[in-house]
Amino acid sequence: MKRTYHYVFATSTHRRIEKFNQLKRKTWSDGSNVLGFFMRDNKGTSTELGSGELRLSSRKKKFVHTEAVGLNDDMRRKGHGIHLYFALIRAAKLIGARRVFSSRRLNKYSGNMWCNKLREVFDVVGPKKRKPCPCHCRGCCNGWGRYYIDLTKLNLKDIPV
Image (cartoon, rainbow, N blue to C red; front, side, top):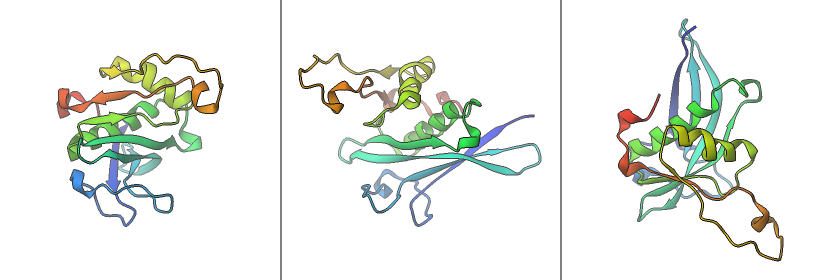
């Protein structure tokens, strides 16, 4: 069975996002800049796999970061997660972003994705080594740092589908 993936990158009012200027600042009340991720089978039916967000980091530098990336519970551990990140990176490149950063809060799934799996395909720049602090607060004890992919060095055809 051949699987083809497709996505829809839209605002909370279901308008497609095609330019960087259309990205909105994320507030807690609205779910703007959402990418819906789907799989189409041989019969032409689409199945929802998950979703993710591209949030605006810097409008001037054209930086975005991924947030709230996740697959539906019944679609986990089937190899769809890497394709969800490919779709997010492709959408960021299409709208004209220069860098895609990882989320500020990486868990064991997304941290492993940025640290290991995406490095096999892209040139992922990892976090700088930090000095351990004596406070042992939650922010300092986070094992994962911030990662990013420089999109200016990529062509659209280099991003897998």
